[in-house]
Length: 156
Image (cartoon, rainbow, N blue to C red; front, top):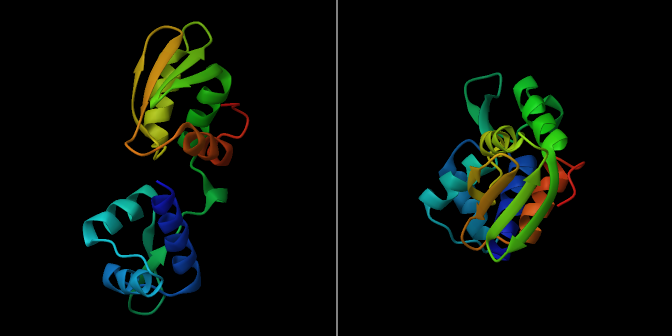
């Protein structure tokens, strides 16, 4: 999965450096950098990175990364739910068990689903326990890195 993480990092870099107005242009830049992906894979990558198109002020649009400083208020409240509820996280393979404060598992699981962490395939919540399944090829370390970026106060 390192290849995917490297590709995502390269996509971010290319979007920051170039004025990219189409997936075809981005695919060409990726090929020039040694990454050979399909258009479908690139579409999924752009969705995962939450890339959008913004106006250039003239006659077109170009890709832009989300501004992490402009986290929506609803996203802030979901992050707060995770911070407030999580007590511990343990893994066995691609299955994780999150222990939460009594009665917080449902709100934490919902928050994780809404935050769309790319490593998490899905969650199942009880009263104080959540089972999470990591996506194929993702590791505990990938999830921890994602937590450190989006929810740094949670110790995974």
